[in-house]
Image (cartoon, rainbow, N blue to C red; front, side, top):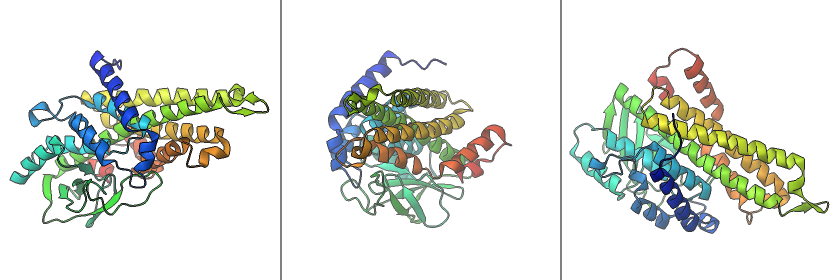
Length: 355
């Protein structure tokens, strides 16, 4: 396993860092609240082809892999870009990879999704009734992929688009979350049976690894903010950055974030290589990055003292999102329990993981 970037991947990282630093300043992030979506920035992201970068070239995508997507997610996390790149990329890849039930409407929708004319997202929790709850990007998406029973459905949301956002659920992280109603009559069936559950499970794993990469990016920028601040703020006449306890905590956070980066890119590599451990690696990367990013942002906020809690300081933007981004997937304690069962317990049925 060689996780060093190729020349092309390094160039992609440098380009995207420059792009997001320019287009997603903290002022732009604040301006996008409370919905957490910048339509103009999303159009630029689509024009770069990022949302379809992993879709095969013969379908109009970039033909790249999840390592490239992880690079994009890391850069997004560093700047807190208010665009649903991760959800859209995972949904686009899923829609393009499934043939559907020979419905002629699906081919047209797939082409429009890959072209960026429609915004698709993924419900992170299977549904049992007629409502998918707290769908990431559900307030701005045109299409939502959901798993109901053993059917993978593609839902059209006519009243939810970047131009007319609606139904957003207020949340700490300023994410465009929404409950999406399921209209069975208009829904398209992407897959049924075990194949549907497997495809959904793999999509969730890809969301986890990309979110893990984004959380690493978030944490690394929060750490930079912390280092800069402790080298300016004084207490008792000296810089607080000279205090050993602060130095040690910053060093611990830096080491943890290095581990989060390694896990995220290892999980992305495993997806590209289609390894049997890919899904487990994705969950590990997500859970570890969630903890590392929140701990870093939380401690840096405390280094700011009371200032850190005020809206004028940037660290609160990172602190709130460090918590909210990971909670979209649900209770992390349950995820740890499922992970332990998959690694150390008996073989688990796909239906159990999806549920």
